[in-house]
Image (cartoon, rainbow, N blue to C red; front, side, top):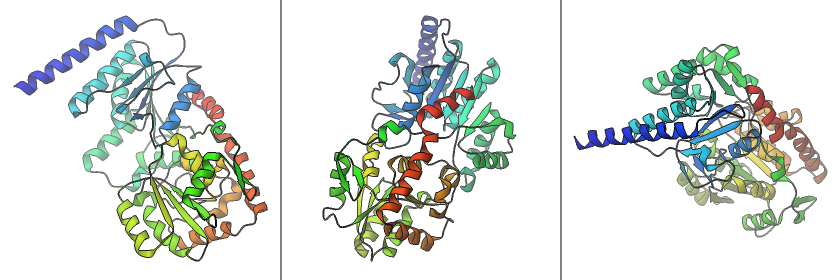
Length: 402
């Protein structure tokens, strides 16, 4: 009885608050209006969600954006606080009602486009409201979800949501075709928006040089922390420590390079960390674990690295490849998802068939033995290619979605 009364009281109070706020805030829109939804906001996030802030800043010049985070903490400075809302409830029924009521409020305020980043709950709710009221829902998803089993109800809910959204947005043409095939969606329902990177954040900031490579003072400090001796080349892995992201391959990769002067820096955390640390210790491998690093600082770790490795078994449009290219760091990756499409043609030899671990190790060894001139050539190719994913170019593509 008490729980039912509390549920009724909180729900009534929430709906009343939304109604009053709607009346106060309604007005004539000056710019096209978008409700932009993200699964989480955290000022120090180690995830790619940090990049969404830059996109919103760029797009806000042309759109009136209201940002909704399904969970999170902390303040932000890239959008006015009155246009930013973090959901308050974690209890599933209240969370669902809060999400739905918020979207009703925003629709009444004239927000006729809902852009949902990853969240199926928000994509479902906004699609229901959009379908009734003539608005549109754009749902962004970029991965290979069909490779992994879902329980029956989760799979059914996802498939219904894909059908309900106005448009699915994904990162590359090949992914567009795969989503169409696996979820029986017409190609006309799927739009392309590549991931992005602000190249200004990767511009040189002075510092010292290793060979001909200029690194920032922060990157120099990190490099010395990773390898105090200064005798080793530095490999970098940045991802969640899970089998899906290839973390379990790292000990085998380092064993294959045991005769090389190389040390691996691992950025990230996850279910494989304990097993990895145990193997590294028992096999006496040169590996250093840093845990999660705020995404805004990750550029300094790329600046300290000689080679970036990505042995993932599942990727869509990995931001880490953009970061590697922006920093001018050669990379080796398995050919999964959209990796080959987003990489320079000259790098096709460094994109290895998935599962070919010996081929992956051999390509790392090949780059480790390149002379400085060849490393600089690869770096120049990357920095030229990645310009197509620079933030201003992708903001223009974002505008064209609407």
